[in-house]
Length: 373
Image 1 (tube, helix red, strand yellow):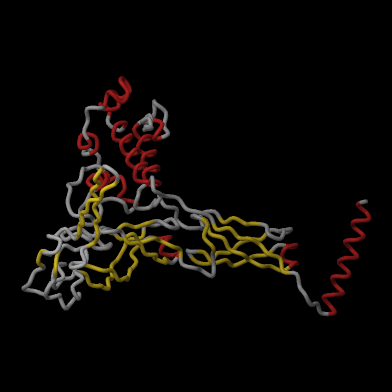
Image 2: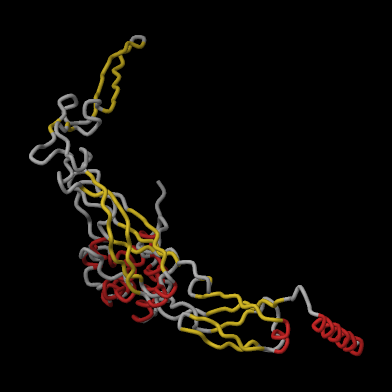
């Protein structure tokens, strides 16, 4: 079986071996924000995040870094996950970006690095799209989410049996949920024993029989619940960013199992004024031919109100005027630009006076061209 070699910690963070503590911290924050599984849904995001966090845990600690520099991975091989990560305040590192302490009190260390106990299966995660106005994305803030999901029935607590009763073990399969039929066949001189395993018809594979089903959930153990909750959209939230809400996903298929998580996927709401491209905004402005030739002033909407923009003389069709720092707030700091694409209106119908003026202009331009040649 092929194995993957462990990458050098300095290479993982993309820093030089003499990088100072600030450079290491900045590199970690940039990469960790990029690969944090709450906002990066690629299959390898969590493993990349763990690799980045491990590199930071070693290189941010002077003692561990000295041991690593002297002996490589052997120098830090004796450290457990608790030794490496428990001294790092992940919440402080990410709080400004909305990825500090997880809801429900689960820290990033607990979530990614502490070994979990065996137990009932966790419920599946749930995703929903949230259309967010550009103003909210620009400034950040709370947005309400409404959705429905199946939850453990509060009447029977997930047993499916009416209150005061309980499911009984299926006698047909002895609680296994399966029926095993064994038979022996003679194939030549050898006797072959064959087993056929099927779902128990008596209990439908549950291993239990409900004599008196719960009326609230009709014996299913789950009911549908309409939910309303508030999520905090960080300023500059990127298109497709996933905001994790723990324990608000689908219920576990096992009794006593915890629900999965809800991932709220941020999408920019359509806006008649702008098109979004990362932190930049784009807008088309149409001007007349005379204004393109002579220049003009335009009143242009921005996320902070209307501003006046000077269109210089000789502006060409599809030319782009950039208004620096008038776009969206960028996630992690800074701000994008507002780009104005200038369209020039060519009139389709002319009055007699306009036609005469254009003919005169063409004559003048023709004379100018002859003189230049």
